[in-house]
Length: 391
Image (cartoon, rainbow, N blue to C red; front, side, top):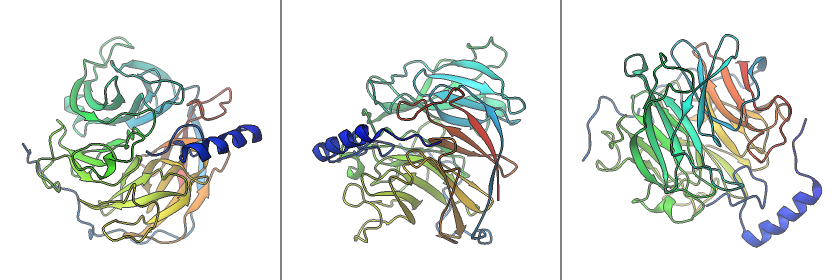
């Protein structure tokens, strides 16, 4: 069940593309541009030469075990609680629901105050979610979201004893000042194996921020849980970990604790990057494997029609990357810092746009669809969370 624009819409979009010279988050031309004191803490990101597991097999398999839940509105962020239940955030409403891993029942947790979606076609709102690595004691949920003035990261205390819909405390902002735009707000956040908080940001549809070391846009950021520059960052007084990114929406660590990121290109190449501290990944001077001095080339690249990547997860020796416009799940088997074989595509066109991929403790995956975001064609049951077995 393909979800494609009508031929007339595509033709009109092509005209807009010729005028604007850019494309949208999900790669449909004309739907908005795709462009675009230090605190010490235990541990730093693993070096690029960290050991890895045995190479993943060249071929794998995917089985959709079940649809966990349905009828979610614009789901974006997804995070697992201790015990297995999930927190899912709605980009447009700013609300977070708890989804039972047992039967898929949804319970509203609360609403993140200050979330601003923006106008039609906006990619802003409530984006990434992460759960504190010390959640059992501190009960903190982290959210990346768009406000009237910027994108920011805040933490909220989750009190399960309170009534449904009132379980989130007041937001405590840990980082503000990430550039916002109608498009390219980034938004993925995750705690790494070093217990530091990482964030992928976008360049807000502008070409300048990605190469501006003073800007938080077009970067991958690394910070302590309270938002201070993490020990071991390239610059001790900055949360900037890498630069030259266009719009990062996927972060994952492999068995060797190496950080990988999925990134939207503009009109030609989407990217999978191996992230090294201080690395410059080229945008806007390079898109895809350009071989330009001073820039780090991606490890893999895809035509934007095949990917437009968002979520990224690691399981069973492979990276798993969700595609929006591509409407498929990509498997990238790893052999250390390189692909062990060519990427494989699964679920192509079966569930529409795929937004977030989350690895489970048992090696399986949770995947969210993204058909109610204004760029898909939602069915009666959209959007949904799928449970996958992979190998």
